[in-house]
Image 1 (tube, rainbow, N blue to C red):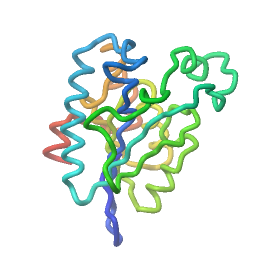
Image 2 (spheres, rainbow, N blue to C red):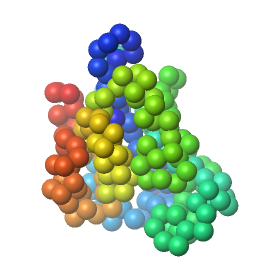
Image 3 (cartoon, rainbow, N blue to C red):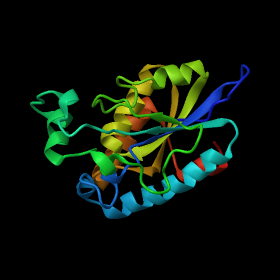
Length: 204
């Protein structure tokens, strides 16, 4: 989400990155679902740029969001449909496939949201809201994959919890270009501020 002040009364910011794991990248089981490759590859490159900039800023916390399951997927129960059914079918987020992709590994002092019980939002069943509030972080910048699933769910949740959320859209990717366009036209205006990597580098 966006950067944050570590002490005092100044408002802070955080930069959460959503699912930068192998499963979303070239060797991952979900990777093939990204049908439009150019926006995806551009988003990966821009994510590296944004992450480097966020780490350079003293007033910004970097937060990593991931998913990892046991081989039985017991926490998902007997899903009849939706992600609770699809994740076991694809065998997603297991073992090394749930590891962070090279260049996106958390560094010392960066908060990792890893206890998600299968929810698509980074807030679902996690300590993310507590972390942000306890550190007085209310402005967030979000990047990640996939835009219309985990990122959108997180952004909606953040909005409803009262956060000021910016989505760095060209550092995030949907499964198709049509989904990306629909997010920008139909979702972002109601729940977030859509910005570009260049906006983040020069104005945020």
